[in-house]
Image (tube, rainbow, N blue to C red):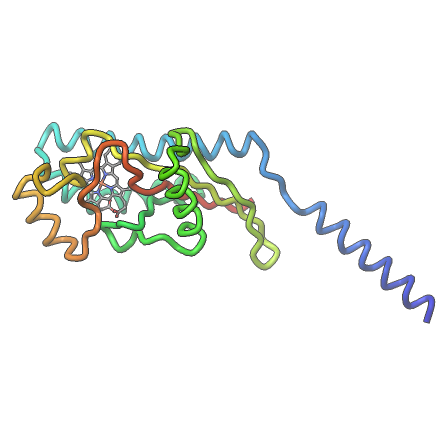
Length: 193
Ligand code: HEC
């Protein structure tokens, strides 16, 4: 009996020391890399948008935004081997509804925003374990800038043509009525470690 207990304790000890060893850490290096991914993803999306507005106008940019944003999101993630997307409680595209984790963090961002504590450099990182696989989840807030108001601003700020286009493609659009500096949503990244 005594032998069995000693053996079990030993086994437990080995098990825990092994699982401790396998548990990855969220290092500053990893955070820096995720921050860079989020930044370059948002810059890519924005530059496509601005280019389309400048060459073909705002109405055409709506359709570019609706098709290209999702394709870019998928391709970007695949090429980098990560999951990357934008999420929002007031989403335009149903593809951008937050999951449970994203909702938790968006709520936190919203609370910080209401207390004037959310900054452009704010971010959230968490280590997640699912069936022995470790993942890092990272989120960074997205704020409304002047050029966003053409499509996400008040009724008066969005032209009639753009409104028509948006309601045709997104009958359940919730992404209007924003003001400069508002919290629009967040970039969300998942990476298996
Ligand atoms: C030309 C119109 C247009 C402009 C300008 C525009 N957006 Fe959008 N936005 C859209 C459309 C259409 C969608 C839905 C398609 C998609 O991207 O998934 C969208 C979706 C989003 C989403 C994803 C969440 C959701 O609502 O589905 C975020 C976040 C977002 N926009 C932020 C911005 C920000 C920030 C700016 C300014 C830098 C901006 N948008 C400028 C049209 C626009």
